[in-house]
Amino acid sequence: MHTPISGITMENNKEEEKTTNSSSDEPAIKYGGIKAMPFVLGNETFEKLGTIGSSANLAVYLTSVFNMKGASAATLINVFNGTTNLATLGMLILMLTAAISTLHPPQCAPGSTCIGPTPWQLAFLLSAFVFLVIGAGGIRPCNLAFGADQFNPDTESGKRGTNSFFNWYFFTYTFAVMVCVTGVVYVQSDISWAIGLGIPAVLMFFSCVTFFIGTFIYVIVKPQGSPLTSVAQVLVAASWKRGVKQPENPAISLFNYVPAKTINTKLSHTEQFRFLDKAASVTAEDQINLDGSATNPWKLCSIQQVEEVKCLVRILPIWSAAIIFHIPLIQQQTYAIFQALQLDRRLTSSFRVPAATYIIFTMLTLTIWIPIYDRIVVPFVQKLTGKDGGFTLLQRMGIGIALAVLCMLVSGVVEGQRRHIALTRPTLGVAPKGGTISSMSSMWLIPQLALAGLSEGFNYVAQIEFYYKQFPENMRSIAGSFMFAGIALANYVSGFLVSTVHHITSRSRHGDWLPDDLNKGRNWD
Image (cartoon, rainbow, N blue to C red; front, side, top):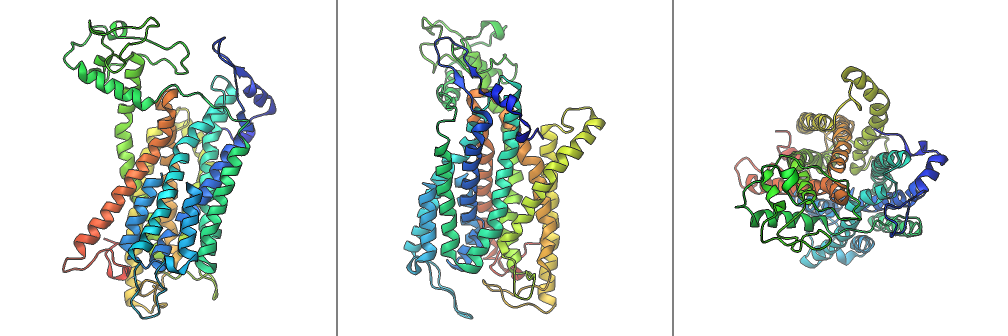
């Protein structure tokens, strides 16, 4: 890991504030450095408190208030989480579904059949999700790149500040989750759903206020065109020139235009994916402007543009593997809550831990592990391997994947034992959605959730750092959104798997594998 942000001295901060001006006819850039961080991270913290506060207990809300089937609720949550990867407006609408009785189905009476939501009640709920998606989708991929822009990349303090920002970014995430799955979830489960869903709306309002307070400190880097447009131009130009012969010496003969005021580090020509080099091959039909740029950028691209596309292509295998990695962790977030509902959650005779609160053990493990890894594991492994950082980024991601597999194995063993005890020993009553409650302690969920936290600690931070380092400056916002895009697709795949298994097995003679009553299911297989 990296030097904490608090370790940046005032002298370094003054160095960070120095202006940078690479061109005499452009205004100098004054970097805010750590002065901007309270506002950037404050916005991020309140945003996470708001969105996670709305979604952490969503499985219980959909099954207990909207009377949805467990598999349907899990699928809807997966789609929602995937798509999120105006927020305040969405949270207000979600709060109204709990506060106004006509916006949700009537409460289930003991022993009676639960009535599901009407089409218009479901439509009102989904409209809340739509606005939440719009808001979160605008913040999540941009905050990483925006925060990194506040530091001068040409100074040592700026480089340290950027590294520290990544650490603090993930700290705000774990902090937000721990607050939400304890305090906010308790209010939702034991006091009032309306108040519990109103709290995230208020927190999201504070997120907006905090962000706008720092407006006069932020560095706003002027965009230099859409990187996605540049990617499309390379692909189109390479397709147009697919019949052009490959140049013998591409580093010299290819079109090598570099804009005069570019912020990007120049990329050298590489030999991989040489079919893309044809986009930079100059033919008799190509025309060049007086400033050296191509007249038609859709038929002639620079080596720089081609190499940027190669950067994107190189990480696709890693990104694809990461999608598979996310799926078991997504399943843990949903079905661990359903497991907890049918376990003994009593801490005292009068207090039961809310089911969604158990997710805190994932975050606690992640929070505890990061300093241990930084201060103990890294120095020890560095001595053994002689490599800076101990493990490479790919090794850290691989360890995270292995831990995710172990997490699911442990989860299967725990679920099998929970079901066995529920069917063979005295029970503790009936769960809200039916099915007897096992006398097995819910604390047996801790091992699988702790393994999920360790898995995230190795893989998530390494992923975002890997993407950020693989892209040039003008594609850093894409790097920040790559992991979230992978999580989004993993949520869709997870939802598809749940729906498919539920649809197929519910018609089989062995019965549904994912029923509301887990004691009748086969989650341990």
